[in-house]
Image (cartoon, rainbow, N blue to C red; front, side, top):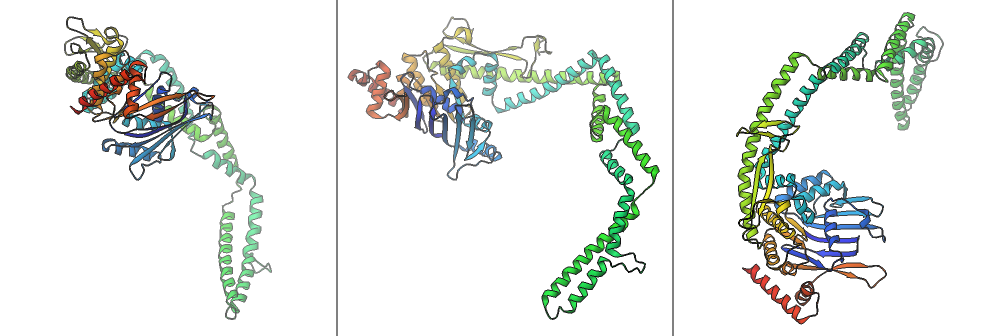
Length: 584
């Protein structure tokens, strides 16, 4: 549930705080006062597209802050997701979210006080928030949206089945495309395979090893400068350990040994000299180790001219490969690995083609079988969905209207097809082999017409609301926002919409932007967006109205006369009717 929303610097709203809560909250106001900015801010807060043109020139930055409490059935999922982004829920169980947008178009998002990608806001929003406006009504006219609505109604097990079908279909399509490509491009594939084999043969003759070029470069340097290296190592070795032949050369190890013994002799008089003697012992050990390693190094130096020639020739062979296939030897090795993989992909042998064809036929059969199961599940859900929506329409002043949900085979085209259990050919896609169409019968005797043809604006608004009420009965986000979905509706239908929204608000937090007093009368909380034109710049604020103020606002909505005694009396009567209805 969204407990509070603060908006600053967005459109006509300079700074406004909306106290929210459970139940039904309505937002009203004069045209142009900024009601749309409230809906826009909710979209921003939950990861919607940012429009820098909405940001006020002063201060050049818009922010939307929200404080939420999460119901138990979504808290675990939300907490897990924001934890991945380094954020956390507050100790009191609330979640703080924020979105900032500058006039230059830069956008930043915060959750739990931590900066996060905007996508995180969207993922949280999918679980806690659903926005329905007039654009959603238009979207409901699309066949794909109607199919998605039916699949959503059918429940999580059905959606799991749809996911399995989509995965299976993609595997089938991949094998179909692979087989078709191998058959259609056999000549080109054969030519490419010949070139790859030539390259692999050349590389295999040289047999380069990872990092070999760098090792050979270092060995070349040693062989080319072997005399200088030997002289330096010999001189250092003699300085450290002497020649060992009784010469008078004073070596470092002897001098250190003498110094250590001299200091140890006086260690009983002053412990400082004893500590220094111990440190000289460490120095002697280190110098001895270096001397030993120098001896080993001298023994390993090789001045063989034949070896140097071998290295030169090996490096030339490797350079021939790097000129053709990659910048270095590691790249050549990687090219060879890729070439071997690509050769397997280019295979057009009869054996492989037969194997792929068998796999294609097997997957085709599984797709057809699962598509039939999916279609049957949709037909079963379609009957329940149509019946539930029809019941809701009866309560929305459309007592004789009826909704039909038609599940028909998808039209065949250039894509793959399957044979349905009835023997008909049906096109198939990743969403199944069905076309879904919602049809409306507005009154008895009228033909069933697709929504886009048979529904007026007011009827479409009520169909949309009826569908949302039905969805609310099978779960969904805890917060629902309706942006003037009552457009084109009036009279008795408007009162019935208010009743349905109030009923929906028993189990959900419902926010409604409306221009209908019949709807506003059913609110548990009434917010008014008011415009102030007294200053140099037009601004809007939001306030809660109660009691007399609320009746005045309804009178303004009824007749445009907030101070009319008759209008206020009418508004009070409307509020009384709404209260009795909610109590009942």
